[in-house]
Image (cartoon, rainbow, N blue to C red; front, side, top):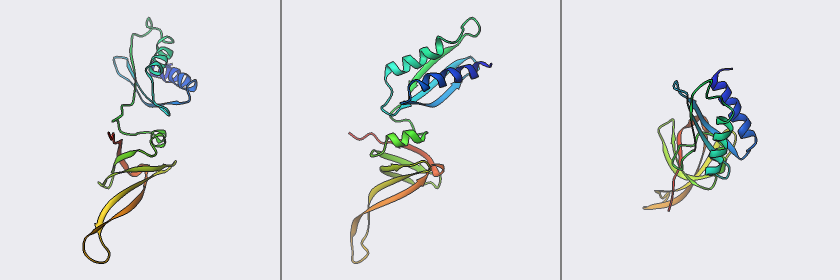
Length: 155
């Protein structure tokens, strides 16, 4: 079994034991540096990172292959890459860039299996008379049409 396959297998077993955690990214460099990025339905604690790191590290033989390992959580400003990340952020404000070049700052009100639904207020010209009025807008965006989505941190 190749080194990367061993790592993938050990990681899968470790994540099976912690169903609230899920994988965002795994990379193994040519110099055997293992980098694991995780997220969780209730976030990722330092202890979660330690446990996943140990589950991999303690089951690989450094005599067979020397390696380094880094396990981290997806940062608060990291782009969303997984449907579970969208689902855990329902109710929060997202900045979404679409493949059509549109940029939307809106509240995520739904995250399904195929698309998300965003809602925001916009100022538009009145239909009758002069001036502008505030209207509530909604957009359904398929995951394939999202170039990048990031949670906006609001203080």
